[in-house]
Amino acid sequence: MSFQTPPRLLDLAGQSLLRDRVLSARDLECLPSDLFPPLFMQAFSGRHRASLKTMVCAWPFDYLPLGTLMKTPQGRTLQAVFDGLDILLAQKVRPRRWRLRVLDLRDTGQDFWSRWSAARAEGDSETGPGAEGSSGMQQPLVPLEVFIDLRFSNRIQDHFLTYVISWAKRREGSLHLCCKTLDISGVPVRNIKSLALVQLSCIQEVYVNCPWNLSSLGTFASYLGQMTNVQSLCLSHIHLPASREEKRVEEFHIIRFTSQFLRLQHLRDLYLESPAFLTGHLDKLLSCLQTRLELFSITDTLLTELDMMHLSRCPNLRQLTNLDLNGVCLTEFNPELLSTLLEKITATLEDLDLVYCGIRDVQVEAIAPALSCCHQLRTLKLSGNLLSLAAMDKLLRHTTGLRSLNLELYPAPMETYDAHGALDLERFDQICDELKGLLRDLGQSRTIQLSTNPCPHCGKPVSSELKPIAFSCENPA
Image 1 (cartoon, one colour):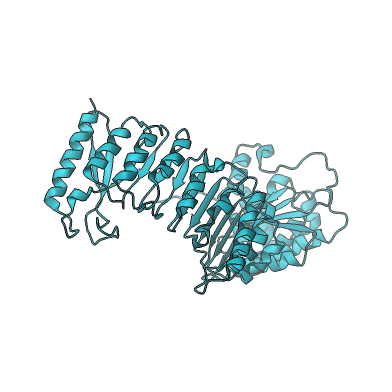
Image 2 (image 1 turned 45 degrees about the vertical axis):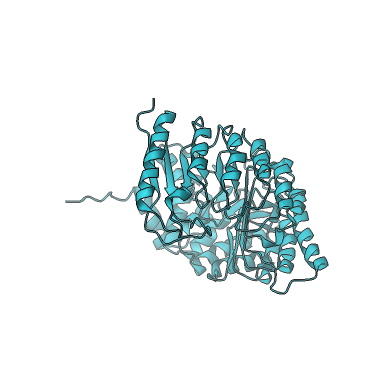
């Protein structure tokens, strides 16, 4: 037998009020502030648009997190909210009680409404979010801030976003359209022109995954330079055109883009995936960095030895906690360059990804001493490289004292493959036993994982059903 919680008297009263009449400004004059949120929720869920419009005009808090109520945006219901805002924005003198400063159209996960309900249940209306002040002073005419997550995608036609931007455009000067997160995926640069309406200095995270050419990247640069508070920037798959542009034109667009980093005074995390345009030009970007990065990721691209030299000498990479060079071939470089870079970040490095970097024994010989000093290191990923059993032995010995290390991914040693590149299962089992014995001898409880993916001759993935194998030393000496 199941029991349902009976509705509260407050909820029943709100339902009755909304059912029997359209709320007027006079109705709301005497309504206590802490009754607004539950009544607003009922009006919104019940699509009482005329009452919603009136309630927005009298909203007594500085914050209205509408996005948490809009799991599926409803055009006409949203229109009622905007109609109420239009009335207020058009007034030269706004009502004394109206305190709204921020309209949040994002689904932030912060449940304003539940926190208010909890405060109400405890009988403490002052702890409700944005509780009304007691001064009753008339509020100055400052622009309303409207927060929204911006996503431009070729797979999703976001009518809600289009509607909000159109509404904001007609009210330029009366409000600021702000966003913390900007996501651009697979669209031509001409499709993001509405960014001109956004308060770009509010943006903190930027994700761009577009097959743009350098000219389009240069156009985006004019927006990027205004995102002065961006903390995380992820740029993927910008490519060089099939018919290469003139060297002079190509360099112009690269400088136009990289020079914008001079304005990014708060950048902490920089992700560059397949940035073919930076091959031979990485110094232009690194020299424009204004902050000490915490994360630097440049993956799946070709770098020149000169690029690697600039990377190892860049002063703004000396406090990295995360270095990701996945898919950057390091085989042809002086192995001391990677060692030099690691030596400068031993005090801070926590995560190192060198998967599919063409690393061989000579690189291991160079970087092993630096790795042994990375006492904050938590993850070390070296799978997809071509290492001998002797190199594995050296790596495991040099990383024995790293007490924070809890994820280690290594390639199966080359001795586990035959002359044709096929995995020798019997030899693989023998080497597993040898490595397990080495872990036992080193006397530290530890788990490593071996991947059998890469072919030892070409480095490319091979067909294999074997999963990474873990080794544990359960009883350290």
